[in-house]
Amino acid sequence: MALLQAAALPPAQPSYVLRGHNAQIHSVCFVRHNTRLLTGDAEGWLVLWNLASKRPVAVWRGHSAAILAVSTWTDDRLITHGRDSKLRVWQLKASDESTFSIVLPIEDPVTPRHEPWLLHTISVNTLNFCSFSACEASPSEAAQLSIEVVDTTLLVAVPGDTEGDIDVYSLPSKAKLTTVCPPRTTKLGMAMCVKILIQDGQLISIAGYEGGHCCLWRFDHVQQQWVLLSTTKSHTQPILSLDVAKSLRKYYTSAADATIASHSLTDLTASRPIKTTETKHSGQQSLHVRSDDKIFATAGWDGCVRVYSAKTMRELAVLKWHKQGCYALAFADLSSQQTETFESENKHSGDEQASTTLQTVGQRRETRAQTTHWIAAGSKDGKVSLWDIY
Image 1 (tube, rainbow, N blue to C red):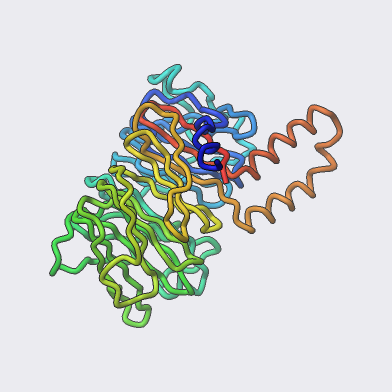
Image 2 (image 1 turned 45 degrees about the vertical axis):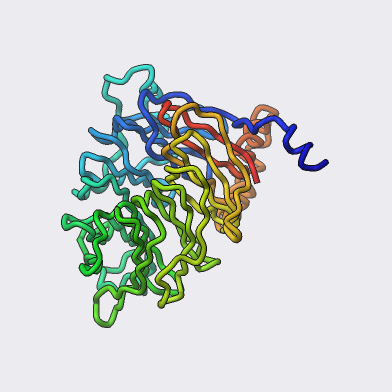
């Protein structure tokens, strides 16, 4: 009976659809404690959306070619990576949003817009469509790489000029620190996706390759070199994306084939993934694990967003609205740090903002935007769907 009732339920619908891009969406990212969503398209346009009002607050063309990835670094810095071989860091403060154009690319794809203050630019290799990965390093962690210690040091990993290599830069210095070299005994092909992170105080790098392999390294700060921990092959087609569940000590990969695989971050003898699932749906990319490590999701070439259990890898939901392929996906960050920051800000400003009914309504919208379990999916159709599930 329960199965019959579940089958009778109508398909899930997005809570909202953001329409404003004139080209396919290549990247999405929640910023400023989930009050904003940054989206980038195939023509280099960037739109910063207010999630409470679902309206744009800043529109500019940040790159002369497709956006490969967008991310955030502190509340007022945005990172964008373009096919024009540039990785850029912009400063866009909340207090400055009123000075920016809100004319969307779909309304005017030609007229230049006022740009945020450009803090940093790094020239990088983008021949293989591989987007960057970044992580913040504490002063002690930065010291392991002989980096000049600053309050907020960011490590950025991008494909190198030699096939299979991964270059690691630091910001704000923009210095190239080191190169992660793959084993030359195995034919891996180009690096298709990378991840850099700090796990248990150790700097870790993971890369997925054109040949379906994944390589895991740890940085040895004594020898000042990368040590290859494991090489696994779980896909017959190029790996499209990967992400890490730190608390589970696992990472997950998706590829142009129909396989989803989980791998160990700690088993140094692993030559095979922990588990693989044959989904029967090829072309799942932009795999992301939610901040609580309970679920992960993929954006599918068939237009579907698929949600999986991080523990069992069982498919939990299929979100179908877009009629064209989905290329980008992001989860709202509901980590304890985000929640504490949000509660602290509300406590500080709540008395001032509750003076009128209109302000109270605005507060409620802001609260909902910051505490909703959003999934954002960007599609070839130029639209971004917002889903509220789990």
